[in-house]
Length: 216
Ligand SMILES: [Mg+2]
Image (cartoon, rainbow, N blue to C red; front, side, top):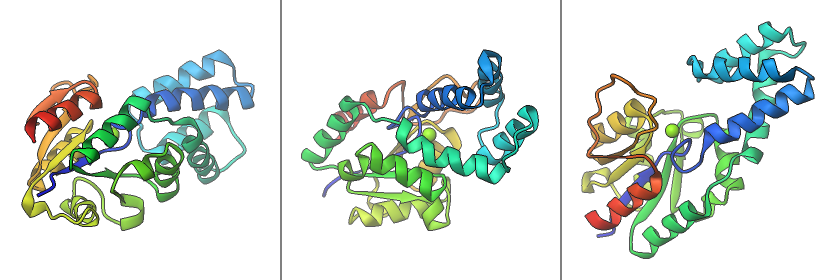
């Protein structure tokens, strides 16, 4: 039987934080907002407004921008796929896993345009067997349903087990465990005090891939 490995996208296979930094720079430049604005945007992101609709409502108010929140957010979603990249080592890692018999899929939460754009532009669409996007399927991690869709598209079933690798303790690790999968958490130092019950903890997805090879 071919083992199954499901990967989260943002800050697991791709470095979303890096792309977001680049976006902030562009956004401030375009509007002539200056360096202080960059710091303000970084701080706003760090203080925990990961949902971009909320984020852009605050940005619009703060800078008194003429565009609607919808317009700002949708421009952001169109731009981000151009700013993200997947490291060649990660692409190679996926290819090595598949070459040694693994079935590999991406399971990600987010809007269809943004997530699909990122998966296609980075080349990840061709580097995996399948993907399942919450914005397309209408079901989000940690719900088991999204993992099930990804497994099915790989010709597998969750009943046969497999692995989930991601940086989010609730969506990826909690969700993966509830789906009956073994889990590898990418620890980026952002979850102090939260229960960490993954089977393995690493700091980079490449280490997670080594574990999969060893565990096979
Ligand atoms: Mg993530």
